[in-house]
Length: 451
Ligand SMILES: Nc1ncnc2c1ncn2[C@@H]1O[C@H](COP(=O)(O)OP(=O)(O)OP(=O)(O)O)[C@@H](O)[C@H]1O
Ligand SMILES: [Mg+2]
Image (tube, rainbow, N blue to C red; front, top):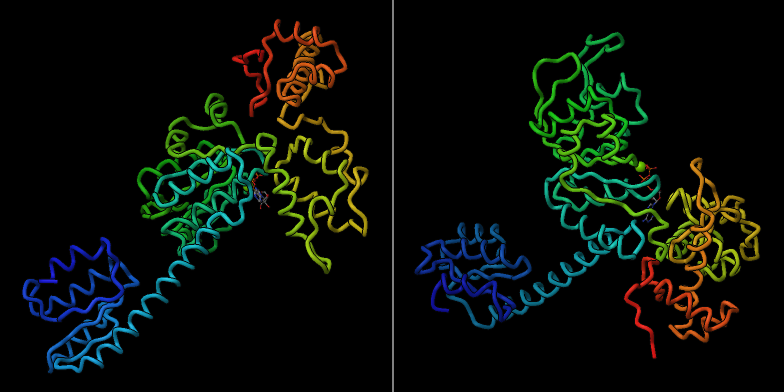
């Protein structure tokens, strides 16, 4: 290459280079331009080995080049054979380095959400948000029912963020009495209240440079909400009993299972705080809204709690078909946590045979089953009453649609499945414009009648 600039221009592009051989003294980049060149080359491609050629007598600058990341230096004049050996070694080293980087990247990708199981559409949406938001400094609000994995998501955000080498501090705002929460979060000065016998550092200070996870934020008192808002806006707070503001650099991730809009409406949550927290919001789906993930989760926990010698059983080896069907159609009000606890218990209780339906807890066996696509018939009557006709109609539609779906639109077969007359089924379809179920379990109203 004619000069340093041209070399630098070509570095990041293709073709890829195995090794760089550069003179310390570059006509266009100056007497020590080679060092700069190495630095920039390593920045662009960390695994690219650079060899620096120096004139006799400039050893100190050669050492500086090594510091900048050069693989080796050779002093002019040199024998071509000597350089050949060094170049070969450099190429080999570069390849190893590249392989190593590749492995690390793979491991990282695997580790990324290693603990979060699920590949349903709604979970993939969640992963996409985590990935995008982790690198930023934005405040994140995680919403979801109990046991849906809010804490796991908070961890994934922190450990995939540039703050991962700094602390992740979790505070459960619902578990700490209101009178203590302020001092817990912001610390206190000695003598600021009875029992404050020494200065105490708060969790915000402990999380400096890292992330604070404020769990059950919906339980925080309005008084503290004001203080939290100030930290979010000014990155500063006063410890209890203190007047001097303390500066902190903390990223806030908050979670709650309360309905935030409702909480704002009833003034349990300040509106300004809500908007400040709600910059990026992650809604975790309930398990019944992502039923495709149930088998995956069952298998995951069967593996995780597997203790006995021998290979991990498959779901078919672990459960009888009836037991498995029951689990797949159960509502899981306690979400993943309920599923996890159940498998842990079953693993302990399990003797030689498979888990039977009768081994499952009563609430699971007798719970409101849902259809595989997540629809549950009403079995409870709410205080305001219910329309029997509507419910029975809905149930009937449901079965009709399901039969059509199973029969791939073949009305004869669908009618057979329901032990009804073909013409009766067609009449019903016409009246209700029924079509096969889509993923959400809603009828496709644009259903065209085949032939
Ligand atoms: N997608 C998932 N994959 C694997 N394990 C999960 C998943 N979601 C939750 N869990 C597990 O279920 C348990 C509950 O999860 P977590 O504590 O994150 O829920 P949460 O939403 O914070 O619940 P709560 O509102 O009750 O605090 C944990 O043990 C967690 O490891
Ligand atoms: Mg939690």
